[in-house]
Length: 308
Ligand code: MN
Ligand code: MN
View 1 (cartoon, rainbow, N blue to C red):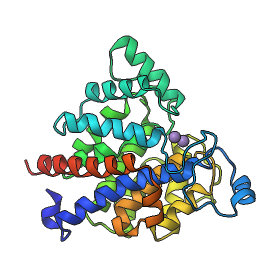
View 2: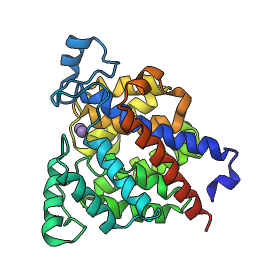
View 3: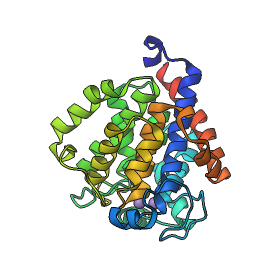
C-alpha cells in the first residue's frame, strides 16, 4: 500500500484517522450553535464564537452533535459490521435504521431519497441536477478510512456508491471524492502544499464551479459548492486546527456542516495533538469514544484491504 513508500508510521496513521473523526464531531458540535445565523449576527452575539456550548436552533446540550456526525457513525458501524466492505445496500439499510431512530435533524434530500429507498428497495437515487446539497459529502469519512491504500479509481467508485443512496449528482460526487482523497493524503503524511497541487488544482480545473478564490464567503448555504468554497478558504487561510474551525463556523450559514468537514480535513492534516483539549473534553463522551473506536477499526480494514 501507499504507506510502504512513505515515512509515516502506522501509529501516526491511526492517530490522524482518529483526529479526522474527532474533528468531524467537534466541528459539528461547535458549528451547530450558530447554524443558520449570519456572520453578522454571530459577531453581534459572540464577537467570535470559539467554545462548544450547545444551544442553537436545535437547542443542543453542550457537546451534542447533529446528523453530520451521527450519519457518519451509522455508516461506519455498518462498514465495520460488514468486515470493512462498503456496498450500497449495507449503507442504505444503515441510513434507513438511522432515520427510523428519529435523528435530531435531517436534510430534505436525505429524507426524500431514504423514503424512496424504503419504497423501492433500490439503494440508488435517480440522477438529479437539484440534489447538489452537502449531505453525501459530509458523511464520507468512514468510506475514506475503510478504503485507505486502495487505488484512486477504487476509492472513487466506493465513494460514489455511498453518495448515490441519497445524492445522485455530479457536483456532489466531485466534492465527495475530493474530500475522501484529501483525508487519505493527509493521513498518509502529505503536506498542505502537496495536497493543493495534487488535489485542489485538478478539482478546480475539472469543475470550475469549485473556484474558491473569489471573495471571503460568508453565510454558506447547504449547496455543496458553497460548503466547499467556505471550507477550502478556511483550510488555506489558516495553519492550525483551532484557527481553521473558528474561521469556518464564524461564517455562519450551514455552520455545523462546514465545521464538520473542515474539522475532518484539519484533524487529518494537523493530527491528534493539534485538537484543543477544551473541545475534546466538552464533546459528548459516547460520541468521542465511538469516533476513536471506529477510526481504529476502519483504518485496520483499510490497511488490510490495501495490502492485498
Ligand atoms: Mn447537522
Ligand atoms: Mn448543517
